[in-house]
Image (tube, rainbow over all chains, first blue to last red; front, side, top):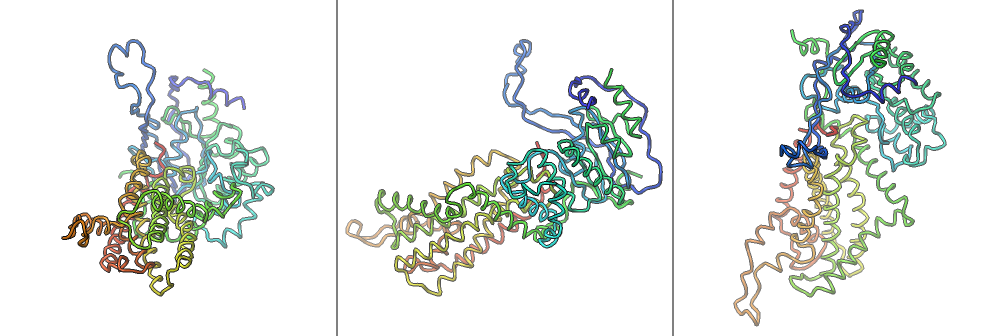
Length: 274
Length: 298
């Protein structure tokens, strides 16, 4: 828990120190995901800053109000994930972790560079419920149908999903009545209905309670052991150490370090404490 | 040797690329139960919190017809009114309601369900289609009301009524095509969402829901005031011959109502079918072209 406080209060201008080059994973396993020099830029409407006196004079901010701003979220990230890898992604808030995960899942297009993968990665992220006005039961059915299951297949798996999420008592309530932990649990349970070759878990487990965390971490290890590849974004160094065989450290959209969990986490903490 | 070659050799494919059109359409077709369930569950949840519940599915169009009937039947005097005016009005309003609601809801189908789009991978075309299906499911009971109303007001039941089935089916597919085009445009340019109600309203007032275009702008027979008759505005009538919504409305009306005003214009079947086939194929292609863009947050 103490590690989280570092992330919150770190200044964004503080560029992390350059550390030793990434450690290449050994062994002759097939590559599953190749991330090749990926840049992601967002164009967003900014509401316009309050202009300073100098700006006002220079007439630069004449059209103050809505302006297009470009956010450079990823600046050339490259790595290769291999079979049976479970990769932890660490970094401060705003370092580009989620953007990278969304790019790997194909939800955010890259501005340049490319990502290749063996099958379509599934992303499990925090965020709103699937359809919050519908009951948990309906969401299980719709989620299953969306992933391409038939009604019969969903019926077969239904009980398992509900008991994995541990929300038997609330399954007939609309999801807007769920707590954020319950929502996350149900989302994870729905997504783990399908067997994923590549699963990306973006802080989705952080809101769950201890019991659920243990269950989902066990599920992640299962996936990894069945020749799958797992990406785990987390601020909890403990769950990263428990589940990951490799850690990638991002800072301000650049890959700082890639290698053995203990080593990377140690360096990360060192940089945080500076 | 580039990384792309390496990736290809290892059997990896580029993430975020869209599947070929044929494969994509098959995937959407395989999700048909999803489309239907999504539509049905949404209707249920929408009405769950009302004390009248599912009754609203019938009540809403009835109230609608009542309001328009009062305004155009009583308050505003006759002008361009065909015989069987009340039936004419009810059919027009019910059918148009389906069209305009599908259009506005389907147009924002992608932008309004971003949570779903960003958490699960499925062909996004499912969402606008589900929005149209949802409106279509709501429309079906109103068709039943429409028929009951026609029987009550003394219109003879005939085999001819069956023609509404192909007409409505065509209209459904046509609307799907239009909604697919609009849904993609709304992703590129959100402001379109705000324009849609005005566009549908424009269609509402120009399509001949509460007046007959042919009666209002067509040539008039000789009368006391104008012994030679009036030429009307033939170009306007010709123009509306090619207006798809007008075509569909006329087809449904001519299937259900008797009388010289409601002769089937067989050319309309051809035009309407052409519109439907062209717009739907274009819509599917146009929507698919931007498939990889829909999950984007910016």
